[in-house]
Image (cartoon, rainbow, N blue to C red; front, side, top):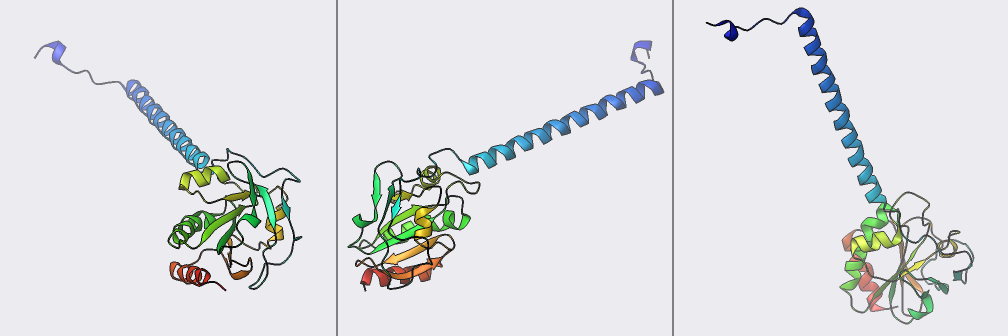
Length: 214
């Protein structure tokens, strides 16, 4: 066997230096992996919040014929209100009176609203005699998507009135929790009220009752 083919055993100092290099490479790989995970997490959070988009309406841009008060009950008349509409123009509640209406009051950051509104929209669409309209309130009070971002992301197209920063309409409609949904007869009076997520069977019963009229 030639000298060139013989392997020389590394010295203790060389072995220690090699081990230090391996440890440094492991630490660098760990740090880069951690940074990548943090970057992914931040991207997910930012995408989930999607805070871009119009905020609440300006002070004085909304009106409602009722000061803050308790949640409306069956038989009460929904007060007249108006506000800037999502996408432009103006939302006038009076434009919807005369036909059975589902009026949903929601906040874009509310997880129960985010889950309930697509189901509510699909359920109402299955009842041609009904219409669904809504009020977005408490806008920007908690981290979450913008009204526009949420609606676009879910493919929802029902009318949305944009409340102001003082929650003038939300308070006038007696919000105690989200989503607050009023089932309003063609006479403009409340037939039923729900707060929070509603099981599909109960929702169908409420819509059938509403479609039947007072």
